[in-house]
Image (tube, helix red, strand yellow):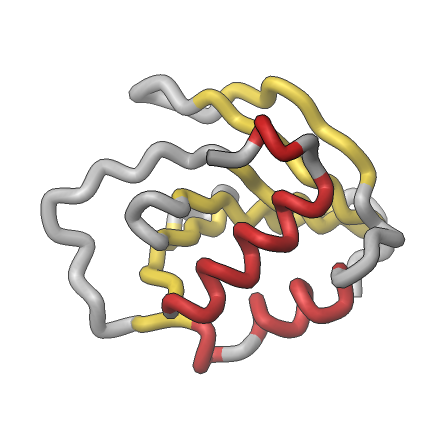
Length: 114
């Protein structure tokens, strides 16, 4: 229920994500649905092995409230999500990956999202 939500565009060199740009999307159309999808276990495939994929975290949603934050990073090529603060990573279901990519595309100019 964090009141502030930011969309981050990232450049991910080997060691850490670098924020290239950010924007406040706390009141963006669809943010309620995006939040809900991220807390549903059915949105993730906890059994899928990471294998040899090397995610490049392209985008993130940062939720913040009174000094606390949670930053969910996304790699749409491998359909992976990662909680930055803990390093926990999981596979997104095709439905979540498509929905998050569409939501992010709606927030950025069309040329920004591959």
